[in-house]
Length: 388
Image (cartoon, rainbow, N blue to C red; front, side):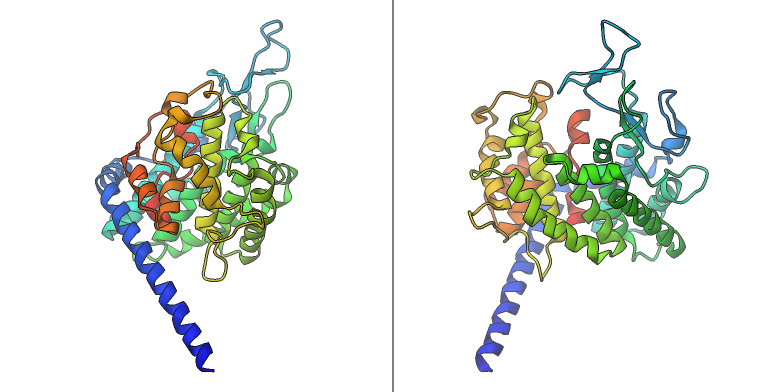
């Protein structure tokens, strides 16, 4: 009995020590980001809501409330303009319809900035303004976005939408997390919060039951990781414990064993035409999964396979190339090579999980406000403070 009591006290000490360490990194990150957060929140306060209903494309098979985007690497056939589009992997077609994607990213930026500012100041004005945008996108009948992605990443002459398009809504993760951060504010609108959570619950149902969602879930590269990352984020907001457990199991039994090589690299990403950017992106997604899903019962930061593969090994593999890109052993990305890396969230989350000051210092000195559209789109966590 005495040994059991001592063990319980030891665990309490460990959790208390870890919590104190985590608080220290959160405080350090806040110091790094405070000026930027307040500047971005000032910008966000001046923005009016713009949802998918503001613009549409004649190439969309959907309606006014349906999100629409087109496959990035698909181009008109130069031999026959009326023929189905042809693929050029890694090369983005500049004539694609991107208005909805830009609006979604803008929405994410606004909510992320306002939630971050509320977290460090406690000022209710940020919550009040966030609610205007949240209601416009997710509640108001005239301007809301339908809770599905039936028409995302369409390909002219081939598909009106694809499961692969689900990756576009990684931008909604900081919206969901922002709601979590702000939901207990005095300025929160309980009726609106219920409607917002219902929207995410409806979207989760679509993500997990429609064939597009099933296709994306079973993707063997970053798309599969990002499906699980989104589901985990939205399930946390809606308190869907069954889906949270499903995501934990999927990380442990599918993503990590099927995607990571023995050295910590991601072979399915390194064989692409943008191997560096995709490797960073997939590691960010896996680290974010660990950040979302780890709790006192399941610590994914400590999880490793029998052969030693783990999220820590992934960060250890990629870190030297983040610190010095000239060491990258694979080909350079065909586009945007010069724009990577930025302040990758896996560096901050990993530094926090493993108390690694070197990773934190590297995160601190990298670009926290990227301007390149490709980087912004593939950086799902731009407001890390709301996740810590």
